[in-house]
Amino acid sequence: QQQVKQSPQSLIVQKGGISIINCAYENTAFDYFPWYQQFPGKGPALLIAIRPDVSEKKEGRFTISFNKSAKQFSLHIMDSQPGDSATYFCAASGGGTSYGKLTFGQGTILTVHP
Amino acid sequence: GAVVSQHPSWVICKSGTSVKIECRSLDFQATTMFWYRQFPKQSLMLMATSNEGSKATYEQGVEKDKFLINHASLTLSTLTVTSAHPEDSSFYICSATPAHLPKQPQHFGDGTRLSIL
Image 1 (tube, rainbow over the protein chains, first blue to last red):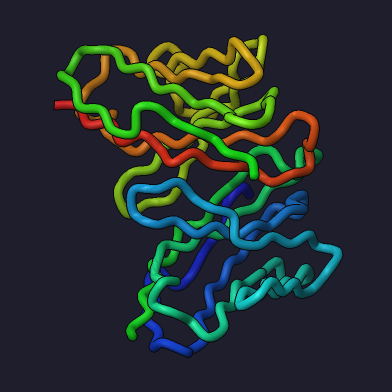
Image 2: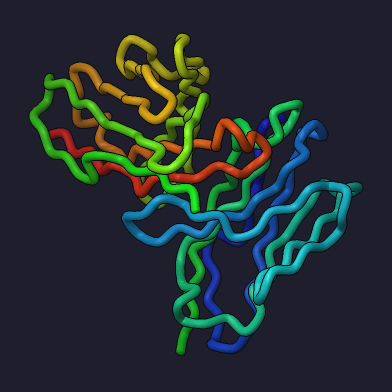
């Protein structure tokens, strides 16, 4: 019940294209859904996050789409750039500690070709 | 912005030795810090929740006697890997949330790469 399933495992996109990464969760107590970006040898950095009371959140080129009934959420990266090449993790937390324990997805390695 | 620092960033040591990793919140106080472990090309797995002034809470399957956590102040948590063996080689990452802003998302350190020979 604590799992967060992420797909695809890897993704190759051309510069300027749209990168889409999907996550699904089972625990209905989750109420905070962040996305993190990680470069090799570095810790994860928060990109964008959403609460289940909204269906979409946009910050610059990054958009989260959230489907509460399907228990799914996705990250869209518009106008993908080579500098976006990194590993992306979705995560979820909740059950009274919204910013507490995070359960991470398996990660997606994004490669953006110039 | 909130910054979390880890030290050392990389450590190599012989099997059987103990290794201490520090996690500091540089510009905020943190009553709670989290320790994660990440194997190559895998996700982050939560090891334990470090609570200032009290015992850490360990996740299922994590040996508390092997991974000693001390959170003696509001800006410092330490993880000691005791009697380390090659299978303990991994990337250890900590995170923290400002105590005065409990609804802020976690800030992660840059991790410590531990290699046991």
